[in-house]
Length: 141
Image 1 (cartoon, rainbow, N blue to C red):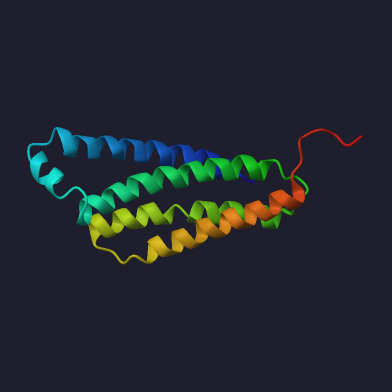
Image 2 (tube, helix red, strand yellow):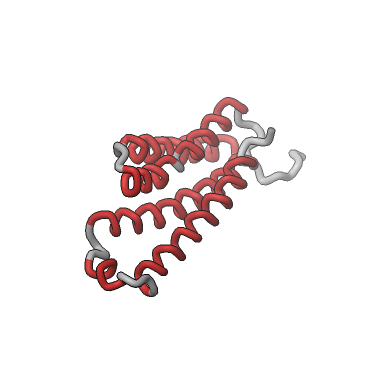
């Protein structure tokens, strides 16, 4: 298994899912029968949280794409370190999923916190690995 492959694939699928969720939010704001009520509470409570989930879901999907492409370029880094960075990036997707779970299921915000910490750790670890092990793909002379 190439490290980063799942970050790219899952990142694209999660992005598609949160794009579709964005269409739902547009429908609720502009076309739903009770759109006036939605607009009136657009910047507070569950509506605000729903928009946060949409934005962070797409951001974290993009971060997974970037992580996946960067991790593939670091062939001299250990598989263990690259797999840890990749796994933390995927675990970071718990943040936007956790926001939705809070909004729609009333669950604890623990998943939001775990996802945020995991994504931050992934970006930091990948950055350190990139500084130490980046390769441009050309054979050494």
